[in-house]
Picture 1: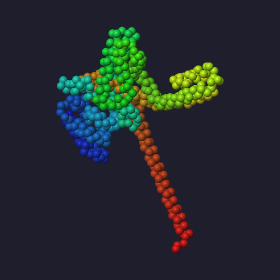
Picture 2: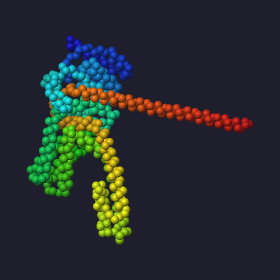
Picture 3: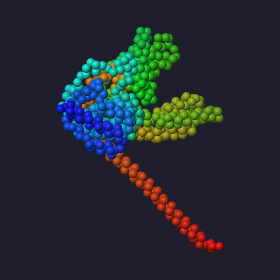
Picture 4: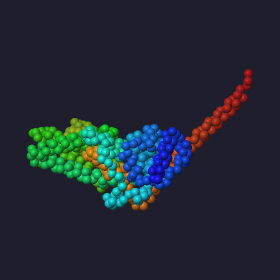
Length: 557
């Protein structure tokens, strides 16, 4: 009986996919959707997924779904996802959605991020039958993430043999998860509302996946990496302080291994399409953290030279930056880091403007000091003459203006009128204009970032998880269904469900308001054009009347 039901449902799905492939109009799609009546009663979801994943025979619906994906028609995919959401939410039939889950890698590869984002919003907080899952343990009670033991049938030895287990795939994995592919290819403008991926990363479903991956396999590996980094940092510092040759050699070996790991990470990111990774400042920082300790450790083996004096402080600084960067995976430090990063990004152009002002003022001060020393040699005191002589050098002038930012005017001449006026104007400009502008910018940035700071921190943690998945896991571990299940169940409080639905309603209302405003603007423009045309008609009529009057003034010959 169950086989007949399953065959009938698969037949219905196949017919629907045939319709989507052959038709491209929305009205025809809706009419065909109404004809399908998928039979009630379902087989176990876990058995169904197991058959799809481990079956040696080609599944007809999967083949047709791949054909639909290859059409590269976003409207067709949207219609198909709407049908899947209807089956999943209204009819509580999840088989077709499981097929979508299995082919999620193909959807992301073809860049169907906007339909996937819409599907995630539709499927968030879908009620899952309790008989399909069994509560195993609470993994993180304070994050509302509870562990479930899904009844996945264990595949045979042949089925469980890892795909792509060759040496090259172990060193440079290519068969990565859809989650990792999404993280390494996201653009910088992902948090903008019109971005296709913004709906994915802002959904509680995405946050639940991050929490699950962090607790299941990434957390303890992260602690191993962090401990190894601190040990390397300690060995490098001890080699500098003590000067022992054995510590220099150990530090050089460890630094070389770290550099090779970083080069491997760069190659993996490039092979898997992580081009945006190379366009960020973080890549340069990672490379500096990897290569500077190795170069400095090699220099320590030889005699101390000028380059070693230059490299040592920079190496220590970047190693501290790396340690702080690893701490960003923790929520408290990560949120502070994100806020500071956004503030620095917004204030950057203000700092550039401030530097230009100081350069201009320094240039004028150098010219003025030279003129005073050449043409006013008698009225200057020895103290003022010494200060003016110092201000003839650009380096000293820069230091004088930077010190003035902190209220230190000791480098300025005291009895010169123009210098006194310059101090007053400079202090008023900095204290009233620049300081208040910085405060206003910081407040605006904090208000903007506060609404999405948790999402940005979750994305940072997702980057840590992806790095661990690509660099510290074998193909067999990446295909472990306990760490990479096809489905996870996320338990939340009803208040969060209501809050999420309220947010979706507000987003829809906001979109509707924007559309209404756009229509009103278009209507106003049309009214202006009509009025202009009417005015032109009136003008033409007036001109014709004037011409007729002129004709009457001149007699006909």
